[in-house]
Image (cartoon, rainbow, N blue to C red; front, side):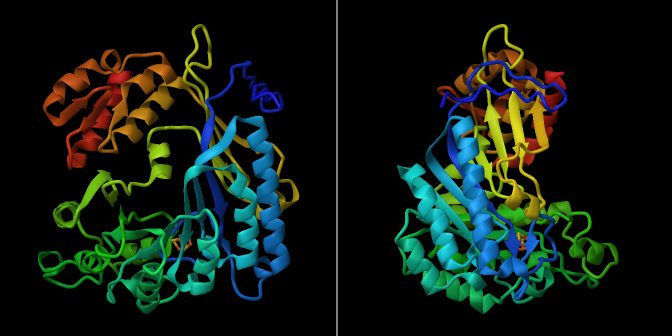
Length: 421
Ligand code: SF4
């Protein structure tokens, strides 16, 4: 089939010309099921409670079949595959029945290239030997484990399913397998307020978690906990039940983490991500480089890019497609063109490109900016680059903020945005 030349007449007359989009080599598959809702989470997920019809084998099989149809449809329409990265994320992919999960993996495997980085997210309480034995016989080679904290004080605040013992057991078990192991942690977990709280002045909880993890994993994501509207934890902080760390305390915690992880051979290669050299996540790197990707599954998001082309209105245009979040509709009509199709104009796309690129220690590839947007970065934000010159490093075609300089990122980006006009 000829690669994509999209004409979406049914969406308010939006019509794309016959320019082929860039090839897609990254695939995200969304498994939205969660056993329970963590107190801080506002991600899209579907309750996966015991005895519910969603938990039934038939329902899971229907969902996986829908994913595969959704995948076939888009990968034919866009130039998708073979994939150099695949990411099964959620929700909680590890709650799926093992045979159902295996079927999904088996059907996707022919589309993975030889060196594909293939990650699956798992939560400790749903990760066991049988699951790892099954995964070890597939092309999956990376497990991303949602831990968030190993602190007895913080665990109950997050209302995670399972326990710290589950988390420790899961990590110890994982170490027996040849998978790359990544863990997610949260920074700035609210605490019970009391007068003269000196928590940050002593040994922080997150450093205790890291001391256990550094010899067992090769990749650590540490996200700042943000209070999302409508979450349980937001109401608990609003009511005064819990208190957040202030900005200075957070910055101090992050600095201590940077120093400790650097001493243990981990470098901070993105605002929230640390890895041993050579163990950086290639899938996330594709997002940060603003490479196109296919996202399938209920609520999955695809980003399709069109190359710069003279006299073309599509210069640098990005198409962002979000699959329906109504899981029953998704299962019934997995090949229906979603209603949520966003056309991101060139200026917005360019700013997104800068925002994503400068989040990383690698920075921005000037050649890629030119191929996507038909512009020269130095001509595009000359005053900002000049003003921040002492905070920037240049290496060949790459331009980045100096290492561990992420605390200036927001101010730098605001100036980029202002200069873009
Ligand atoms: S397991 Fe993950 S996706 Fe599910 S509720 Fe918790 S944080 Fe959210």
